[in-house]
Image (tube, rainbow, N blue to C red):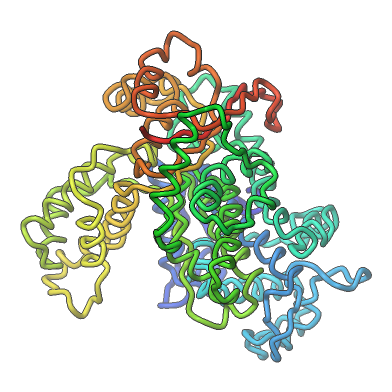
Length: 593
C-alpha cells in the first residue's frame, strides 16, 4: 500500500485530494509534471474518480489496488512453481516472480526476457541498455497479466486500467513483497503435487494474514462496520477438517446414499453413517436415495453463499471429480464439466472472489494439463455488487435501447430495487419477485451483441455504456440468488447488524426478524431458502442459537422446517483466528422436512 501510494503521488494524484493537471494526452499516453506515462489517460481519470468518490476515497482506492496486485503476484507465483505458465517461446515454464537458480537475485524472466513469447524484444533491449531491471520486471509482469487474462479474467482484468498504472515502482526491493514471497516461503508451500488436496489452501491463509491488520483495526474501532470494512471484520478461514465434515456429509452423503456401487465412502474420513436406531435419520437417507438415484450428476448444484477464498468449493470440486470418475467420465473432460454445471460461489468481497476463481481454476488445471489450450467454463463465482446511483431515467433509457418488453423492464426495475446497498447485504438478499429464468433472460438480453442493440443519441448511449455491464451482472446474480440448490454449505460471517450502519440494521429487522441479532443466524435462515428441500444444508455457526433465549423463535422455525442429520458441537476451540479471537461454534448438517 505504501508503494502504491507513492506511485499515485508520482502520477499527480495526492492523498490530500489535490490533483496535478495533465499537461498533454494522447490516446495511449499522458504527461504530468514533465513525465510521460505510456498508459491510456482514462486509467488515471478512473483512479482520480475513485479517490474523489465519497463512498471510496483515497484509502479504499489504494487498498483495492494493493489487494489486486497481491492476488496477481500470489497467483503467478503459484502457477510458476507448478509449471503452468508455459510462457517461453517453446511453451516452457519460465519463472516470473522467483528463480530456479538459488544464486540469482532477479527473477528468471528478467534474466531470460527475450525468451518470453509475449514481449517485444526491442522494448526488452531498451530496458537492458538502460540497465533497468526494475522497469523490465514491471513490463514483464504487466505482459504476463495480459497473457493470463484470457484464462482468468477475474484475477487478471483484460484492460490496461488503473491497476496497471498504479503498479508499484519498487517491487524488487530487498525485503519487498517479491523478495519475501520467494525467500520466506519454499516452493513446496505452493507445489500442488505435494498435497493435491491441500496446497490451494495457501490462498485462504495468505489472504487472512493479509487483512489481519485491518481486521484488528476495525474490531478495535468505535466506528460502525461499513461496506468497505465488512469483509475484513468478518473474514475467518475455515479449518480443513471442518470443510471436509460439511462437504462429505452433504454432497458426499447424496452420492453414497443414492449410488449403491460407490466406494467413495472409503475415502471420506469425516463421513457419518446414519445411526441405525434413529428412525428419522434413516428415513432421510431413504428419501435421499429415492430422490437422487436417477438424477444426472450434472444436475447436482452446490453453492457456498459466503465463499471467502474458496476453501469449501475447492474441496467440493475434488469430491465431484471422484464422483464423475465413478460415473465413467473421461478424466480430461471432468474439470470443465464441474465448473460449468456444479459449483456456485457468492461473497461481498471482490478480493476473496478473485482468489476463489483462481483457486478453482488451479484445481481444474491440476486435473487437466491442457485446460489452457481449449475452451473452458470460467468458475461461476461472483462478488455481489449494488445498484446505487441507477435512476428510473437510466432504467428507461436502458430498456429503450435494449428493446426490453414491458415485463422485462419490470424485472429490471426489481433488480435495481433489490440490489440497492447490496454490498452490505450480499447473499442475504431475499424476497425475489420473479423466477430465476426471468433474471437469466434479462442478463442475456443486456449482455447481447452491441450490433443487435438500437443505439440512440449520444446522451442515451452514455447512460447505456455506464450501466449496461453492471445491470447485466446484477441480473445474473439475481438468477443465482433466486435459485435453489442440492447442497448449501458455508461458514457465514459473524457480525451483529447493530454494529453496522443503519441500512444493515434495518434490513435485518425487516427481512430476518427471528434471526436479526447476528448475520451468522440470518444466514441460517437464508441457507434454508437456498435449499431445494431435497438435499442438505451444512454450516459452521456460532453455538448461541441453540440455547440463547434471543433465538427461541429461530429454533422453533428450524424445528418446524428442518431435521438435524448430524451435528458436531465444537465449542470454543474449533478454530481461533490469527488475532486471537475465539469463536464458539457448532457445525451441522440439516435437511428440510
